Image (spheres, rainbow, N blue to C red):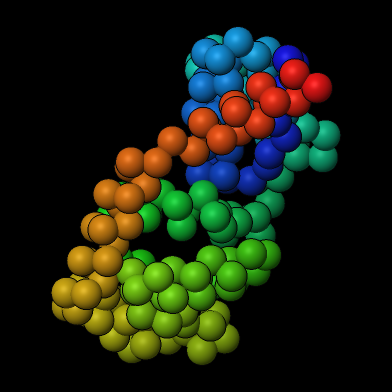
Length: 163
């Protein structure tokens, strides 16, 4: 089956799809990833076909995009097993910041408008000093390491191919 994965954002948003694409290719599918042109070498380096995603050329030349690291950054922190201190700014960052706090891997998010040096320092001290944040982050990292996120997608594609 020919599969096109379209994703845009920061490297942390795009890189997970190279792993999925590689697993899908190993299962016999032809995979193309369409994304920001700056990630062409990442995609091609994984042995996947690349197509530029219209509208993303130069998006990271605009400094307003530099904070857009949403789910990819949250996932990277969870995989690393480290506590999180979050300051959501826009897009889906408030969702992921609240989710990280609900998972018990860090203190509540600091709204950008309430950000201060003292408040950020207190949140960092809390994240470092409270053992439950480290314990929960390490437990989630172990759980994520044991999951095969590509397997359900490949199984679904196999079922689609049968129909």
